Length: 285
Image 1 (tube, rainbow, N blue to C red):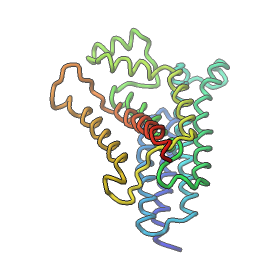
Image 2: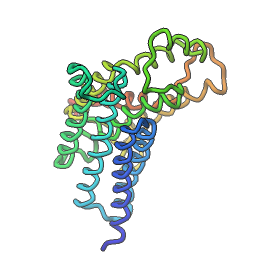
Image 3: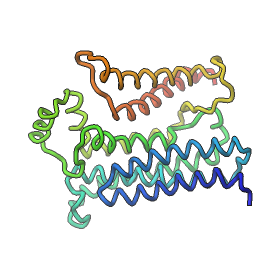
Image 4: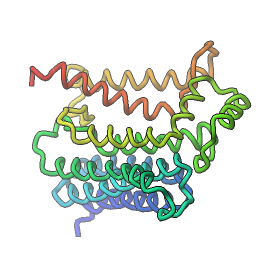
């Protein structure tokens, strides 16, 4: 047994384990726990490849194992989370599926569209030969974290029980008592709409298989000339993080508190920035 190869493979299996635990938690009224599992799995997913390259044990087995783990953690888990978000939006999380309106069931199943397209994205990535310097389509971990961020926002940022949607009057009362800004109110208001998650499922499904080059962060060397697009993106991320923490130290009238909402903003920034790069440099490729 190759001990060195076992190290990155064990990290990959840790990614898979967090994915399985996350799936279990989504069915046990713990979407926050599922989201945290996904974040931890994403960290492991980053380090397994790093460990394999550092130890010089990159190979086909590790690649296939990583893809299988990613399918569970960043394909199945976020699809189930989207499904559950939609059932919550309809107020049917605790309603047996046989007692729900057929139309609602069909809409709720649209969350699994994400899972199907994640499988297509990962299968394409496995056989692709043109994704060493950039990704084609949004990587499934980024798309999955976009989904998971909504549970973090509702539970950690706004301390809201996401399993019991509030009507306009209740939400308005909470907004007043909690001194929410209009940004906070409209963000929470939209995160209880099932249509929002249907749109997210469709959008991410398309983005994962779109024939568009997306930025990756495999630095072959650290020069500005070879990595300026990566450095500019990282500068943009630093600006977003600065905007997140500045209001806690400096009072700026009208400035919003992003908190956990910065996560989907960073991922959306990544998509938009990559799209701009793709179309602005298309003629040079």
